Length: 225
Image: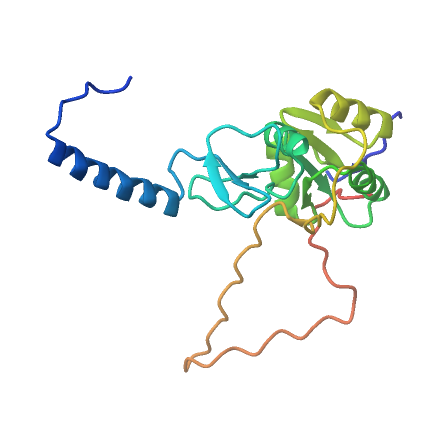
């Protein structure tokens, strides 16, 4: 095989104003401008901090200075610390990596993405629920799976992964400084634990004695590396 993979089975018209009215209008306009400066505009998509510390907001990304992308609620997005060009690509073609524990191809793929400075989200596949979610989302039970925007790449191939990242427009060399990748999180949310059974008098039933054998695996039948 050429790829390594692990199986998991107009403006309004102006009205002439009396000089006194004009003065009141000017004062009102000044107050309005102060309010706009004090608050984040609803239309703002980017927050720009100048060398002097002055903060301005804009609906277009500046090309000559770094800016922080804003969420709809005004908070800074998770990609805000990324260099401008990288942030643009990551917003358009986000990268997700599906992995499993003790999976050599997964480790190689993760290391490759980090060396190139690719910001990505990692989802771990370990339980039956995880495998079912992977099958539903990616139509496969094999890891690693790399998702670049709408492009899916099954299995790990250094050349192939790099080729797709090139096509998406990601920088060929890392431009990250002090960036911290987030640890993998389960693909499927953990199931809520069942309530303890109660005895006849409402007392809690004794816990089952642990087996002396190996603990039961949460992986589905046919799950292998």
